[in-house]
Structure formats: C-alpha cells, structure tokens
Amino acid sequence: MIYFTIVFLCTAGLFLALLQDRFRVWTTLAAAVAGYILSLLAAFFLCRIVQDPVLAQQLPCAAGAFIFFVLSLIFCTNNVLQKLFVALLSLCNFTFLGFFLPLLLGVMPFDTAGAFAGFFSAVLYLLFSLLMGLCLYHPLRHYSDRGASGFLLGMCLLLLGIYLFSRGTFDFLFRTNIFAARLLVSTLLYGALIFAFRSMYQAGRFRERTATIATRSGVADMETYCLANLLSAMKEIQSAQRYGTYALDTVAVLLADGNEDRIPEYIATVKENFAHAPISERYHENPFLNAVLALKASFAAQNGIAFECNAVTGNAPLKIAEICMIADEMLTKACLETAVSENEKKVRFTVFPTGDALTLEAVYSAPLPEREKFTFRGKKASDVLEWLFEENSQSAAGPGLTHTEELLGLYGGKLTVSGTAAETILQVNLRF
Image 1 (tube, rainbow, N blue to C red):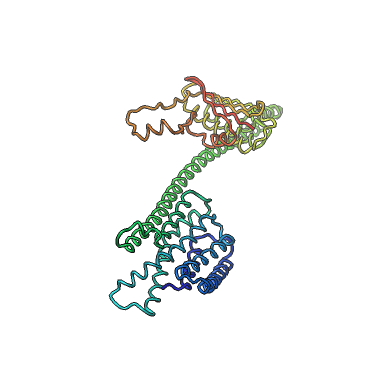
Image 2: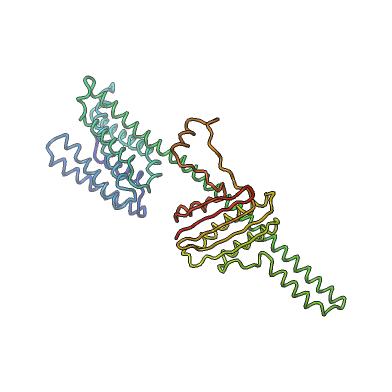
C-alpha cells in the first residue's frame, strides 16, 4: 500500500524542484504546505465518499495533483503545459508504483505483510520520485522560460499513455503474462520519456555553447575595430602634439632671431594648416556621426588614402547609433581593402536621403570581390542539398558587415555591391 501522506509529499517536492517559482522562497514553501494540507483533506473526504476501491485510490491522488497544478498557476512562472506535465507525472508515478509494488513485494522470498510493506513502499516511492526529479530537473529548469511547444505536448501524451498502461487499460493487447508485459511497456515508456528530455536538453546546451562562441567571436571583432579606431585617434593626437611643439619651437626661434614681425604670419599659417587636418574637419552636424567619419578620415590619411565625404541625413527617423554603426562598418571595410590595394587609393563616402529611405554609399579603390561559385568537386550530398534547398548565407559584400545586414533585415533595407576590377561600390539603402 502507498500512503497518501508520502504521495503528496513527493508531489510537492516535484513541483518545487521542476518548476520555477515566482515569489520568495517562504511564500513558495507556504503555498506548498497549503497544497499538501488541502490534498490530505481532499483524500480524506474522497476515500469516505467513494465506494469503488479503485476510484478510492485514484481520485485522491488526482485531486492532489489538480490542487498543486492550480497553485502552480499562481506561484510558478512556467507555461501551462510544463505545469500540466508535472501534475501528470505525479499521477503516473502513483499509478505505476501502485501495481509495481505489490508485484515486487510478492516475489520477495519472505513475509512482507505488516509494517515492512508500508515502510518499504514509502522508501521506494521516495526513491522513485527522487530519480524522476534528478532526471528531469535540468531539462525543465533549462527551458523554464520557454512557451508551450509541440514537444511538451507530446511528452504529456506520453505520460497519459504511461498512466493508461499502468492502470491496465490496454491489457487486452497482451495474451499471457499480462502484469509483466504491462510493467515492461510502462518502464520502456518511462525510459523513452527520460531519453527524450535528456536528448533535448543536451541539444539545447550544444546550441547554447555554439551561440556563445559566435557571440564572443562577434564581440572580439567589434573590439578589434574599436581598437583600430582608438589607435587611429591616438596617432592623430600625437601628430597634432608634435606639430604644436614644432610650432612653438619655431616661434621661439623667430623671437631669438629678432623676427617678431613674422610671428603673426606664421601663426596664421599654422592655424590654416591645422584647420584642414582630417580629425578637425566637420563632416556632419551630429557629433557622433561626425566623430565616426573623422576617425575614418584620419585612418585614411595615415595610410595614404584620399578621403572624400558628403553626409546629409536630413530628417530620417532612424537612430543615430544605427547610422553610425553602418557607416563605421562600411568605411572600415572600404579603408582596409583600399589600404592593401595596388590601385590609386581613394575612398568616397556619401549619405543622402531619398524619399522614404536613407542611402549610404562607399566607393573605394579595390577590386570587386568575386562570389565563390558552387562546384560539385569535393562536395558531400549534404552540401548539395544545402545548396539546392537552403538560402545562401554568403553575403554579396563578403565579411565585415554583420551588424549592417542585421539592421537591413530589421528595416527591410537592401545591400548592393557593384563595380569593376579597379573600383567597388558598396551601397546600403535603409527604409523608414
């Protein structure tokens, strides 16, 4: 026999372990204690009202599972299917052990009647509930914030199958050794349940690790671009510092030589020259976009690249941070490819509004990148199927425009790459 005090204690433990609580721990424990007491009261009255001995065993457990399910709707953050799954699991555990324990006690080579049967049943029920909790803890906790899914619906149906097999609903399928066949099928279904959850959990963990590695790689690339911009700015500052020191030394020499009348002319020349430094030019009225363009202009000047810029954003209702990100990626790609080009090094960047869109265009002296053509040589069947049925993930512009392509997908924009063997035109069209 199985005592309902142990059954409801294990049910409360499963709900506490497998579901994500919403409130503080003492509130959750108080709700669990209240559910435990209500379940015992429901079992007490149902056992006295119901005359059928089979229903007198099943109804109290079902009532307890229902009480904990209702409480979980209030005190747990999981979706309804996850809460229903735990309720069905507690009911299946009771039904499965309800016919397995008498079989196990019956095959023991000694008398198991009396207190031993009650103690052994309680210990086995606790151990079985602990086993299910340990097997399902990580999968349900890992997906606690996930919505209802077809997989979870299938697992609930599988639990329903375990419950029906454990009750003997499908005993007509077996000709001989009915109890052994029922036990075998129920055990195999429990194994399939655990295997499915653990497999899904491991697959989710693998994808999580893959996404983490990809994110770290993307962050590292962004950090590299930021460091390149910082290095360019530091070089420009050092150049301005050296120029200023040289100008002061020149003024001191003019004073020492008695050429005070030439100092105002020299100062005006220094001011004019410094006003045309790339870092000092004004490319756009917005200070953030202007800073991005000034840094790229400085990088171009340090690498012998002729840089031209004409940026007008107008009243485009786009976040300036997004425009800065796109401009930074486009100019970084243009400057880096131009710096290693053997042609005349030029970069021309233009931003202009056109109707309901904002166009950013970079024209730079680098050969147009050729897209890799698909060949069957050295390919596997999976590669051919991917080429036939899946969207080509290779960007037309090549690497370096990851965030730009994400923003284009967000705004429904368009990226086009054109040009010749000596010049590439990179154009981004953002709709708003």
